[in-house]
Length: 546
Image 1 (tube, rainbow, N blue to C red):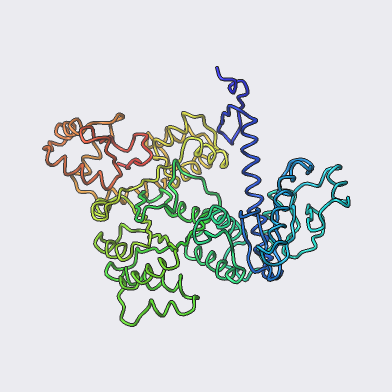
Image 2 (cartoon, rainbow, N blue to C red):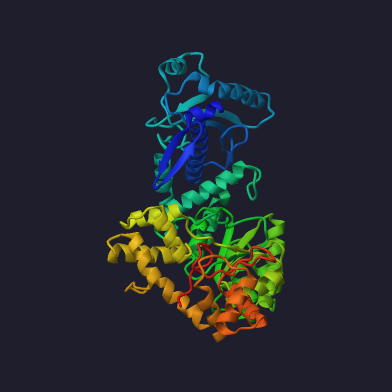
């Protein structure tokens, strides 16, 4: 048995137990990530202070963690987050690099004067304090720690903890004239942009932020979220939920009404530093789609960029021509934009093709409900639908606990089976359990399964509308297959319908095709189609009320 197993530990996360093989390794990993987060928040605070301090550029992860560039000098700062007092061995490597950088300036290979700083959340230990006060300590190296007054406005006072650092950034963000955006949201998005810059990712691939560009950057981060729906007050992630931004140019994210598509996109937008735009296209006629999206997108991206908007919105230009011009200018600036189109199933596949095909420099995320349109979108655009898979047992249990519900693993698994795991359905069912069943999840599940519950659920209200759109043959198919508690192959399902409603195989197959697109059935293979009704535990297929 590996030695690491001897130090196995268990971490309690709400109602979930996470097992860890090596607690020391976990502590090291956490410390590394805390250090990076502390560093990025400190850089964010530097950006907030830069204009008033006379800083022209802020550089991240170059020679040092952060560099403040002034017209006549440059400050090189190393950021240290420690759980105990700062000691000399923590900074001796940085002091050696400072010596090399100082030589570059003295010998004229770098212009201007140079200064150096060690920024730490910890106070210097006794030995290091003596060295700092000694005559041998370099006069151009300062040590900054909490509660110490700084001699340079560009270097904020260090915070003791990550929470303190975040609060300092939030206080600074509150002074900006962007009342439409919560300051904490701006801080997290700015920290994400700093992380990308530290990794050399566009649009800050040279690791620097120009102070003159900060107003545009802040405005850009604000604009990204103005049209996104408000995220839920308490968001719980879904199973293996996809990232909002990817290298794939066109994506199709599919889920029933109640699957949490809008909540997912509004929540992930909060933590995405890329340029984003959101449009609910439910009420836009297909032919006008490209023009409506193009003109708003052009104004949003280039409205404050010195004449570029006029070059894009040429008189008489069509929507596709505007989109092509937007893409060309984005390519010149080495930028990308992700456009989220909600309710994409309301628009024909041909109209979507005209929109997404106008420029290869625009990325699209299409949010849609299952239906016949989805198959046409997949075939026309050459994409594969990505389903939102709903909540896990642990997530449902955490939600239930917050509402005062009680249940074991089997109870919540039963609830997920009945609701398909869709967040809206699970939340609504748990509220009913809390209010009408004294929080007993098992009692609610029995009532739902026996159809003896008194309060109508959101699931029934929504899915009854879906059921009403089915033909008589399709309703017969749903009614017959809903009795099954196990997956059925296509041939088995056909036999059931033939013996129950005298449906011939071609009629059954036509009903299966319709139900597969409308109800989210997913193929297992070409020869083994899972035509089991929605009473199964597949979270992508909620039960249909009969």
